[in-house]
Image 1: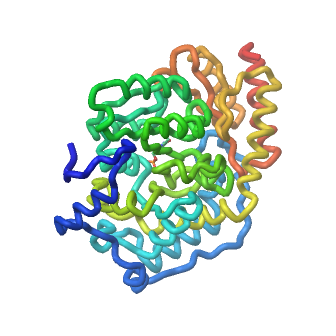
Image 2: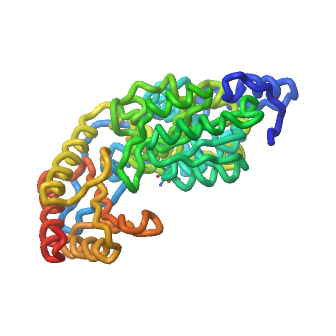
Length: 410
Ligand code: PMP
């Protein structure tokens, strides 16, 4: 149900320009303050320079975190958060549309837009809020959604009250046939269609076939939304799988979290100027929620800067390759083709025993069991970080080998 009438485009997408015109005509359009007004409230440049710390391996080695670049205890990121707290405040104090808007937010959004190859970006208080707010604001009639999409996408689909067509995981052929089937229905040409997928799936380590998905969507005029929660700060220039595959111009909505590789808290959406203006007006999780805390925005900004302009991503990918080779050479089955390495065990009791055994050897890597994953596919989710050194990787492999031998799993 549209809050405001908007004329339907022939491409089955969303007439954002029309919507903004309607808001303007009804004298209801809100807009963030011009940048110079925000700048008057104070600006700081986050410092850069010190070395990345190495994880302390005297306790347990963590191979279970989404802090993929290891930046949550980086001195530069910490300094940026500290400085934002000192100059701008520990909290935004109000929604961005009221008095919660600062140059720290603007700086982060400018960097995100640039990294993602988008006209503009908007920060949300979490990735969850970004997904739910964006999907509901678009008010799609029909949503095509990968069966393994994140819960925040599923909740967005439910809250949007849209008809949701679920296609098989990463299966472009199944998607194509479901699009075709749905297009044959009476009145389909009048509907708005949204196709939504994670880019990197966190439980399977799989990467969505984005180009095939774009081809399928374009054949039916559907818009594409990609959740880069597990890819932001990684891949290509740090701009995720969308950048790595050169698809920024074909994907209408890029979205992600600041809480994984970017070592902070919060979420974002990147896309066209019109998309962001619509979200500023209609995404309820943006409009009616306090602006992201300035220290969180500043930390993410600094982490993104480091991700883009240092060798930290290369170090992660070297660790990923080393660990995957080592696990596979033991005869273990490792799924996916991303930085997440799910080791398939099968039986849930075996998976728990393996996780417990490696934990006794000072390595933390959790067992993932049903109902999170299908029966018979229990696994250990191994996630290396850029800040693991060679000894850490070797220690992790040794823990798997010793425990696997002990349990007769190798
Ligand atoms: N999307 C995906 C794919 C996620 O994995 C997550 C976090 N687990 C989110 C969205 C939500 O992000 P946040 O934690 O910032 O709410």
